[in-house]
Length: 307
Image (cartoon, rainbow, N blue to C red; front, top):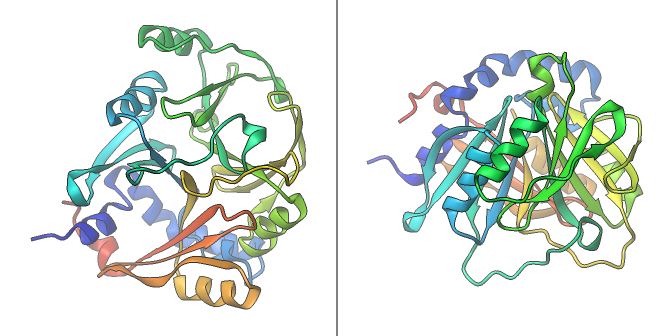
């Protein structure tokens, strides 16, 4: 009988994301040409990153919001111990992975500026009227859109569990890839330390700072493929939430991640180990403890048929 851990390893790259595997070697090679070998970006095999989110509300409400209202493409769920599930949605080559929080968890929440952690998911849409209509049809308040940077319009809303979600409308004509990207926003306590972590340790491409109309502050973007990590800070005297959301990277050499983390003194949240027969992982914390989770799939796992 297929174990949960083996099933999870096989489904980490679903058929819908098979292009990631095909592009893996080329992506890693291109990254190696642009990122020094001591940066982890040279080892990334997926042309994007994934994000995970732990929630406390009814799963059906989360599926309705991300699947029916935002109209993200659903992927097959993964069975979890105890009869629960990991619910997954696709954005380009990225995955949004939703799982239930541990019973009794009471993690900090509030305005984006009030708590450090992964605070914002940003999605891109072509039609403001159609998106607004879906919100209303499902009983959600209509988003309040306004002009934002780069000639786009945007609105900030929360999902049923309080996660902030930025909706960005890209005016036509826009190519399909404009909507196949994902951004995540991190509220951090020390910009210099966080920028060094994502630039120098992870090795993401540093882009020019942007003045965020939605947040009223400067955001510092770091990109790999179709995923951008935006950093901003409102000071250090705020509580932290390091549990409810984090970033996942698919990588070719997780032992190298472990060695570099130890050499750089990076916090190891969960040590290097075999998650299953075909999946090795290590969970690291950025300077604020925000989880950066690295997963290496073996050749056998990549070739295995999906159950």
